[in-house]
Image 1 (cartoon, helix red, strand yellow):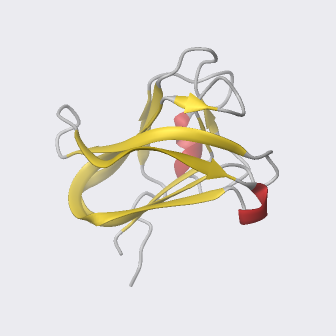
Image 2 (tube, one colour):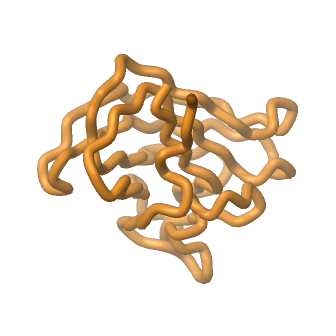
Length: 138
């Protein structure tokens, strides 16, 4: 059975603006979001799965009504929260309201405790933005 391993899990971040804290990325609400400090890319948001878990897919969302934008990011992972390895190399992903502002990253199954989105560019706003950070076991 496919399970979102990140649902309700602890999060951390490099920074956040105003009330847009990282805890919003695992709250199950696409309308709430994390936003990093402005004009200070790269920025990151991270999910702690509480223990090492096998995952092969990450789904990222922005609020469904947001305008289209591209965000460039790699996906690193870690078993200890200190040493990170690249799970998915940096690429530019299009968040488009016609596809519910949803992007799916697939990769060979890997066992990690921490997964991080490290945003290096955003064409829609000078900050990192993610509303949902889902980690799927299949």
